[in-house]
Length: 255
Image (tube, rainbow, N blue to C red):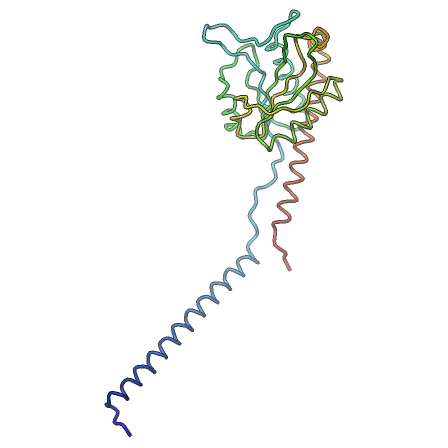
């Protein structure tokens, strides 16, 4: 039998002590992991899933095209034909659209309510961010060297604006009996820099005599505003339904 102070006995005691320390460390680490997992699990069960409430009043920015001063100081009225100017006609449609949307529960903000707007093209899209808008709609009239060119077309740039562009294009062509020229993509400043889904509507050709006469008719402009308002509301309601489905699917099962 070896004495207690024998080198081999001391070595065995050190090895046994080392193994005990390692076992204690492993046990402590295991208990710590179990505690962390238990806390996380209980937090997931009893803590409500945070989510942003569904917006009950959508906000739209309505941009009546043109109405700015060019470098020479002349007011930009857009295209002009048959005794009418683009800027004046789209302003009238914009104000009618504002009223139609507000009657449907929207908050509608216009980039101008007169001949002149203080906003540059870039500032118009910045306005959408300031008012926490959900959509940006720019109204224009088309022009072409050939007086035969006619119809409506809707431009978009952001992919999330495509469904709205398609809906507007369909509704406007059907309800207003305008030739469907299809939706287009183009990086116009007011739709390419907008922080929200944005569309630019070319509501007929002012260079076409027949369409110019319709555009000069207040009843036609009122109907156009109503059709746009209905399409925007339909698009918004679909967005809300899809958002509710997404939120409900993200909520974990509760016992």
